[in-house]
Length: 473
Image (cartoon, rainbow, N blue to C red; front, side):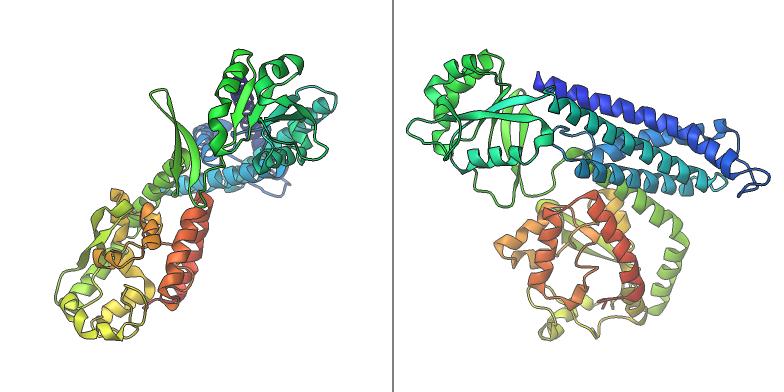
C-alpha cells in the first residue's frame, strides 16, 4: 500500500512537471515575441511561427525524462528535504539545457532564437520551483492538522533504534509520529522513552495502537527473533522496514535487488545505479562522436606531421587494463620513436614517479612532434575511438598497463572497478606533479563520489588544464 502510494505521488509530480513544461512554452514565446520583440521593443525582430518550435519542444520533453531520471528527481518524496529537491531540479534543468544546446549545434539549428529557449527554461524552472514549494506548503499545513501523517514504532533499543528516532524527530515536516519502542527480551529503553511493550507481545501491540509502520532496528545477532513479528505485521497490513546498517561496510553502497522474485541484498563499491550509468554512456557516445567528426581534419593533419617527423606508424597501440581487469588495445598518436618500448630498460632508473608507473620530464625517446602532442595532450585524442567502442569513458581513472597492475597493492586495484577514462581528477590536479599514492587516492575518491554532475565538472576543468599544459610531459 505504501509503495503504491509512493508511486502515485511520484507519478503525480511527474504529470504536473510535464504540464508545467507545456505551459512554459507559449509563455516564453509570448515574452520573446510580444514583450521583448517587435517594433519599438528591446528586440526588433520577431520569432518564427510557434509551430516551427514544436519539434524542439517535443525533444525537450523527451530529454527531460532522461535528465530528471539521472538527477533522481522522482525518488522518495516524503523524506526528501526541499533543499535537496530544488538542487536536483536545478541539476535536471542544467543537463536538459546542455543536451539541447549540443543537439542544436550538431543539427545546425542556429537560426532558432537562443533567447527564446533561455526564456523557456527559465520560465519552466520557475513554474516547477513554485509548484514544488506550493506542494510542500500544502503538505505541511495538512500534516499540522493531523492529515497525511504516519505513526511508527521502533523495535529495538540500541544505537540503530535510537538513531532512526532522532533522525525522524529532526524532520517534523516528514509527517511521522513516533508511537514508542518495542523492546527485545531483556533489553531496556532509553531514559524517558515511551515503551509500547515487548517483542513477544507484538500482536497485542498492533491491536492496541494505531501504527502505520514498524521499523526493526535490532542487532544482526538477533535477526532470527523478528520472524514471528514480521509475520504478524504482514498479517495485519502494517508496513515494515528493517534497518540494514548492521553490516560493517565503510565503502560499499547497499541496495536491495530482486532475481526472479528472490530478494537479494547487494553491496557495490563502484557506481551501479542503472539510470545514471545509462546517462554516462549516452554522454560518452555524444562527446566522442562530436570530437571525432568535428576534429577529423585536424587529426588528419597531425597524422601527416607524425609520419613526416619520424619513421614508424601514426598510431601507438598498447594493451591496457580496463573495467574489472579486462584487457583492450588503447590507441594514441605516436609521440615516441619506434623502438621506445625496448629502450625503456635503459632509462628506467631515471623514473621521476614513485610506484609502478614510469614518468620522465626530458624523455629522450619523445620525438619533436611528440613533445608538442604531449604538451597539448593531442596524443590522447584517438582514445575517443576507445570511448566509442565502449572500452573507455570520457571521464574515469587512466587505464594502466598490465605490468603496473601486477605491482598494485590490493586496495589500489579498486580503481579498476569503473571504466577507465581519457580525463579524470588526476588529469586536472597536476597530473605528473603529484605522487603515485595521491594519484590512487584521487581515483578512489572519484569512484566513491561519482555522479554525472561530477563528470561534467571534470570535463570543464580539463579544458583549461589542456590549454595551459599543467603537469603534461
